[in-house]
Length: 59
Image (cartoon, rainbow, N blue to C red; front, side, top):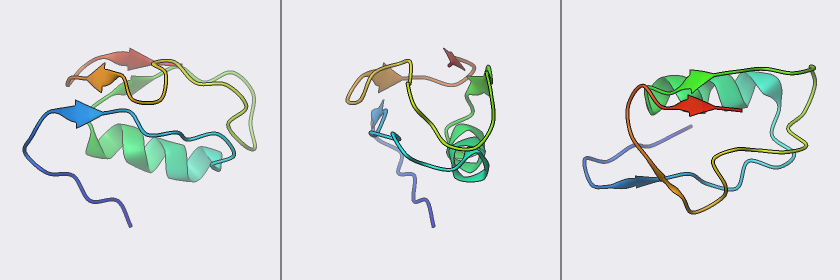
C-alpha cells in the first residue's frame, strides 16, 4: 500500500523494492520512470529524501 498526501513529496528509500512496487510508487507520485534491468532496485535517482514533483524523471 502506498499513501500519498497533498503536501510536498519526498522520494523514499526504495533500495531493495521490487520493480512492480517501484512502478506503483512512480504512478502514485506521477513520476516518469526509466528502467534499467529487472528484479529489484539497486540504485535510485532522485536520492532518498529528495523533493519530487509530477512528471519528474526517475531512474
